[in-house]
Length: 450
Ligand SMILES: Cc1cc2nc3c(=O)[nH]c(=O)nc-3n(C[C@H](O)[C@H](O)[C@H](O)COP(=O)(O)O)c2cc1C
Image (tube, rainbow, N blue to C red; front, side):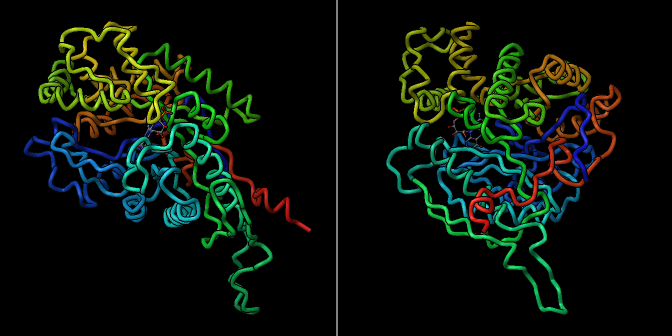
């Protein structure tokens, strides 16, 4: 199926969660089911019925077992969950987050190729470099941004060559000649680089999309450079419209400078929604979320994010003095997210309490509290301003928000001609309107051909 794309159409991915910091304590939250398949299958079904592009979720390898981690403690490993969901869905894209820092390219290439096969071409990889979890992988300190992204660049080179190591017609299943695979159409990659030595070829046949859709999350200077080189879809946190417009313009320039077509790059900021039938009810939903904030735990989280800055002497209703904030370019773990919190204080005058509220409710992503109609306005406004080709929606208001998104926001967007009536193709690549992956583009095939 060729890539079909109406550029006025907005792309929507739905975060695969249903429990929020406050919402999980409600009697009907289904918090007990968090480690079962059913709630996720239901979210995916609602999203698929609404014809959303994909379900997506972050994932990490750090250990979250504190009381303050609440519903985020001990969550399921995402690629395994997506493999299960491939059997419970038929159209929607399945985007998994996986780290280039704490995995091996051969393993990850196999896992994503397998999900792409099982789902009939609906897999996407949200590429992250991890900002935590090093002590679970034998490191005493996290490798710094430059080191992580140098490994990520080489990681991408290896996985792309592995996915291209099978030509599309390599699997013959020719009973007469007893030829299952044509070995001439499968080629080793013999990669020998600074971080990896991988012989290949991949031991999973070329998958329906050729390779999964490459999504990227990391918006620091180094992360943007990586996105420009590799990403087809860019997932980012942007709170203010003007910042979103500037980010999107910068990324499109960088994609063009890297020799790629910015017209086939999709930019999706995250957007946390608290939806209700009336504005007042939506506000109540959001305020319940704020009421349960443990400000000591939130302050600790922010301090760690800032590389260990001590904010214990700052009163919650004061602003953090500007000179207390660190230079984010020097932070080893994350850079773009701490900058968002610093901007809230320095540029927008937030007190420490309000900064901490932004940390807990949505971790710095954009947030919208209101009715489905108003949410549709907000989504269209950002798309029309050039800040977004779509959004990754966090159902911050839980099940009610998921249902109102699927049953009201999406139909409103559709009425306005801004959302697909039906799925127009079968693959995630089709949903995003991305061009197909050409066959056998592996650099090794060109290099080693006789
Ligand atoms: C929108 C967004 C989402 C992210 N999600 C994850 C995630 O789920 N898991 C993870 O390990 N890192 C995640 N990261 C972090 C980056 O992959 C990475 O660790 C990076 O070095 C830090 O991000 P930065 O480049 O934005 O400073 C995310 C980053 C952004 C911007």
